[in-house]
Length: 106
Length: 120
Image (cartoon, rainbow over all chains, first blue to last red; front, side, top):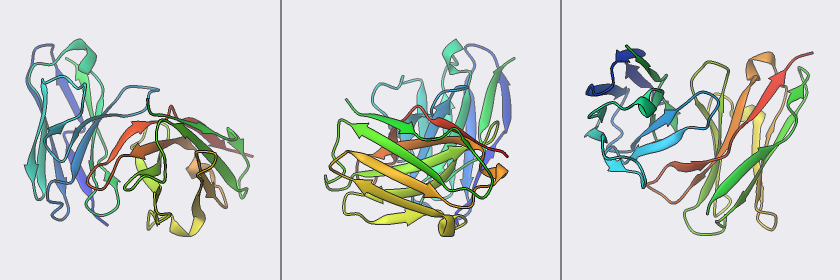
């Protein structure tokens, strides 16, 4: 099984901050990596797929990068609506999610 | 417009079998590449992928849970059914179904989820 390790588990930030979340795969997954945003009581929302492709309708302040085993999600200027939990997911071999990164208000 | 909705019991007893139905619209599960998957999330915990069924009736399961799950489809009703045997309190979770557009893509549209509690 491919394991996904996200860091940090919690991140405290202010509106306007640049935020970076990292995800590491236990083996190479090429660019078969997605990022999701989830708010309490709501289904996850796809933000990024194929490591760096922005899902339709997602604000351009979200971006993804990486390949192989190391990936990042960047929010260029954190907005009030962005306080949520973010998950990475590999889909190179079946599907595996990371344990999540909670972005909270500083 | 793609929509999915989960239905089924919200309370089951330990050792019972859980049957969940995902009813979808806006796409066909006979279109090449399309898939419908199931993902669950215990309260306060991370997401866990469970199973997926594809347009050609191919199925894949999480290796850790494979023996307990069965995924099937009814293309005439636009439904996907997930069955989980021998339920345990650790299976308490919100269960989501989700749409996959094609190979090389992942789950883009999700249902609202259904919270299933396992308790005697």
